[in-house]
Amino acid sequence: MTGEPLLRLEGVERTHRAADGGFALSVPRLDVAAGERVVVLGPSGSGKSTLLDLLAFLAAPDRAESFLFSPDGHSHDIAALWRRGDRAALTRLRAAHMGYVLQTGGLLPYLTVRENLLLARRLLGLEVPGPADRLAEAVGVADLLGRRPAQLSIGQRQRVAVIRALAHMPRMILADEPTAALDAGLGERVIDTLVAVSGAVGAALVLVTHDEELACRAQGRIVRCQARRGADAPGSVVAA
Ligand code: ADP
Ligand code: MG
Image 1: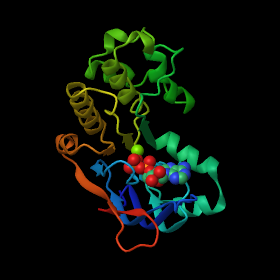
Image 2: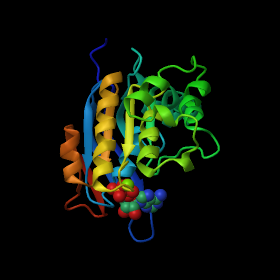
Image 3: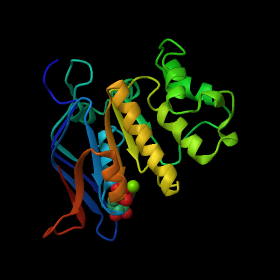
Image 4: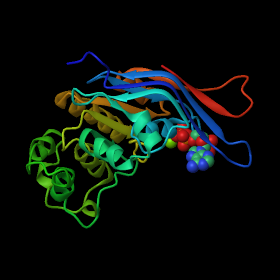
C-alpha cells in the first residue's frame, strides 16, 4: 500500500452557469481513505449531487489543483485526464473501481435480478457469477433472483440496487440519497445494507443525504455542503 488516500481533492471547483447567477461548488480539500465511510450532508440545492458527480468523474471540474484516485496501487491524475479530455480513461476507472447507487435504483427492467447483478461483471470481463449470490443472500433477496424488477417491492428493489453496485467489488461506493423514495423503516434497512455490505467487501462508502437521522445511522465521517458567505455568486463550500 502506498499510504495515499483512495481519493484526494484539493482546490477543486465546479460552477453551473445560469442566467440567474448560477451556482459554484468549492472543495478546498477532501480525502477519502480506503474503506472509509463518509456521509455528505446538506439541504436540498446545496451541491451534494454536484459533489458526487465530481467524485464519480461524471462532471468535469472547472479548476483542480489536485485530484487523485488511487484504487490499485497507482495514483491516477484525474485533473490531468479531464484537462486532456480523456473520457475513455475516466470511464474505465469508474467502471472498474466504483459502484454508483442511483436514487431510483436504476435496474434494467427487461433483465432478471440475477442478470442485473451480473451485468457489471460481464461488462468488465470478470468471472461470472462472482459474489452476486453471496451478496443476494446477505441482503435477503436470494430467492428473488429469477424475478424482474417490476415484480419486486420498492424496498427489495433498492436492496438489489445496492448489491448490484457492489457485484464487481469496487473500491468505492457512491450513493446519492438512496432512501429518498422509501419510508423511514425501509430507508433505515437500505442504509444498514449499504454500511454492512460495503464494510464486508472493504469498499469506501460516500453516502449523500439531507436527513440528519439517516446520517447518524450510517456512523460515517460527516462532510457538509455549506452556503458560501460573502461570495459574489450563490454556491457552497465543502467542509470536510
Ligand atoms: P443537491 O444535490 O444538494 O440538492 P445539486 O448539486 O443538485 O444540489 O444542485 C446545486 C445547485 O446547482 C442548485 O442550485 C441547482 O439548481 C444547480 N444546478 C445543478 N445542476 C445544474 C445544471 N446542470 N445547470 C445549472 N445549474 C445546476
Ligand atoms: Mg441531489
